[in-house]
Length: 209
Length: 209
Image 1 (cartoon, chains in turn green, yellow):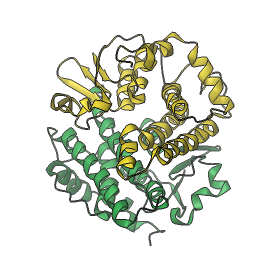
Image 2: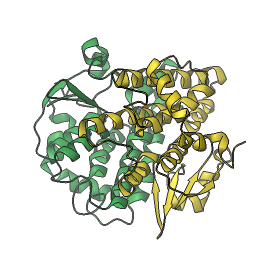
Image 3: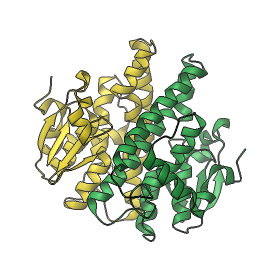
Image 4: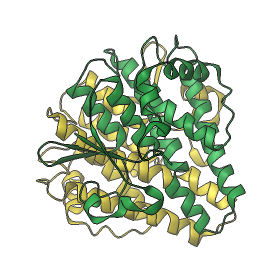
């Protein structure tokens, strides 16, 4: 397997965590987003969206979209599980992940912030856009796990929810969002103690700047 | 089951299609998004994001996020299947769905367009933002299915990909995006012939205006 990513991309970061939690090795290739390398023709052949990540499998197959890639890893390498067996709990964990992957991250990523700058908005407006998006999303995330037993988002093992939460917290920190939510803090601390999360962090990647 | 939605919400529309394809009945409750009814306290108790849809199950359980709800329906009512058995093909179909659910719809929905208006952008700028977002996303969607056998997005039965495509095409039409992509057109025509897609359309809902 070859994982195409970028150290700071939070969608790539999710896949790195999932691979590490499952003990799977993938060769990494890096595409510098600020230099536009994800728009190169040979990369667009792997991912017509021109986004990272993409996961190349043997036999000329390329998977895209971080949550689809992680569901594939879950189905092809079920242990340790990132989703439990109960359908309702699976749905609740996926919903938490999708709050981040659908309603937070895409609204505050590099591409959208660049579109705001192209509409002549300055750093103050752009950063406030990102902060508001992240804070509203994390507020909802906290509500979704407020009655769940810790220390992770959903119980005593990391799930897809934690895999999505930690990179989003990385973005929250970059934009100065105060992480004041108790269950989120508890989950973040539990994840920080795990080697899989440590190894997947942006500053541990070969392309980190 | 009670489906909380809004006739024009494309995320609610996805769930309506999935329920209809599986022959499942749900009581429908409607929350008028332009009137802000999704922010009422009793609804926020069901969905702390204040978004539609939410699916209330028996026993005080509420599921949120359309793709998580549809995966739940798929797991609890597997026939007819919206995802095939092969993990790679499942991943490709989920990725197509996520292009729409993560990278297109949330960037052009009512909430984000209202934020752009609050930044003093006029209709021309706001509509161009939506059109560009939708056209780029559908361009990528076409590439993801260009080599797939039709008539649906992925083969001869409707899948999660079609469930997401059709509501997004509804938005494309509203914003004047030219649907010139041949495989997308083929899938849209195949879906339009199915009663499940017909019944789920916004203009067939009791709250349609």
